[in-house]
Length: 383
Image (tube, rainbow, N blue to C red; front, side, top):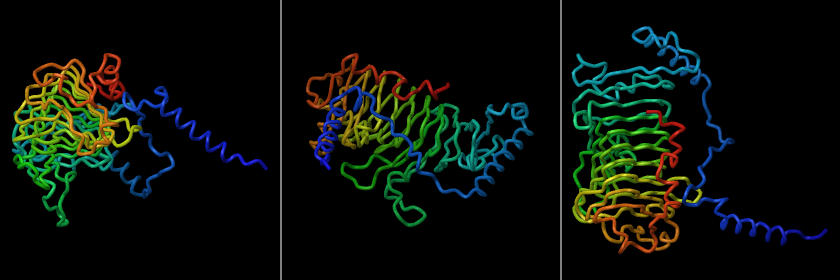
């Protein structure tokens, strides 16, 4: 029998080479391939628990429907009406005195839009939204009036006596999809750490779920302020403040009309995007934004070897380091990252002096990044 192995081996290599060189098959930077869920990987569940959760949810719907909202009584099978809860530090003026109490009151599995209106005040608490409590909106009375704050860092000891780590330091953490936040401030009160300090990562907000939107919010911190962990996210007219890597993570996120303000004492960076493969459809796009502040600032550091960040129509103050970008101490990343500018303005926007491995984008190159299609926004953004 003839030996086909050498031929098959050659054919396999040829196919891989064709795929790598064919931009129609693999859009390694301009779009990428969105990771798909593994259909064969099932979660082990206790059916009794699932049935109990569904029963609990329906009982909750009936309960709140009987109280205030006739929508619950007349809703069709596929209509999920909104329900409103209020939080106020004065128990006489709200349903709850803390945000976490309001979230804990929801059923184990939440399938309707619940709006939690947080009245003016400073709420010193850590908040965590678990994975199955979806469709939650947190709405403040204005970002300057409603503030949620806490002061944990990565080295803060947790309940188990071990450091929380960066992911556990967040003042507010979201692990469920379809989250919305409006007109509210999320703050980590940890002061700016000295250069080179260890364990001082202090997250104000972490989003670890898909399809989240933020409008008119403030994110205040120093090192690692906004942990854009994973999923598709939309930030509109937000203010984000920090010193080092103050927008970081591996989400696919679109920032529109946002103000990025550095409080670096010496050197800092706006972004640390963590894309680790050319097949990952992740990255940060900043459109019609503004970069101001103190210190000397990089636009981004290559946290991931395929890190992807774009600034378009953005004003940059004179705090931007002329090189623009940092390779995270790994020259190999210069060959795989995708860093670009398109029609930016201001004294820090000059492309002269930029590192050779970033790009001044053409209109065609910029097009995939400068609209909501970058995050498939038309499919899920509805306000």
